[in-house]
Image (cartoon, rainbow, N blue to C red; front, side):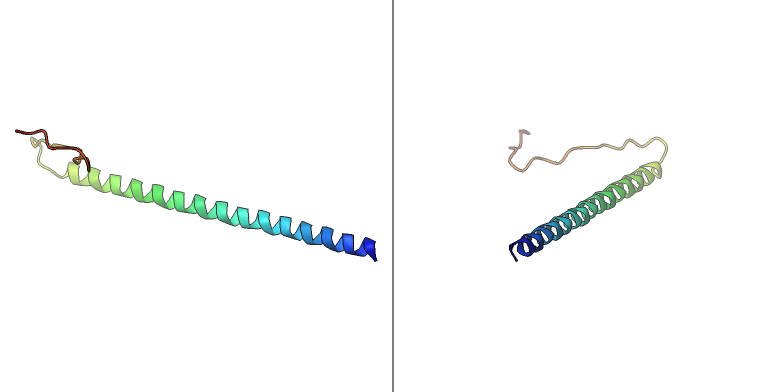
Length: 77
């Protein structure tokens, strides 16, 4: 009887281990999928900007600026 209980406990631990690795595989796949979708979105937005910049007149200058920081004071007089 004691041997059967140990076997039952051992098989239960093995199934938990398999479930854990299955969950980690699903989680890893989900994270990789989200990363891939994010990279595709960034690439799409970059292509849209390039297309917009290419459509301006020949002798036009496009000025690019960073946004002002959230806690940066205005330095202009």
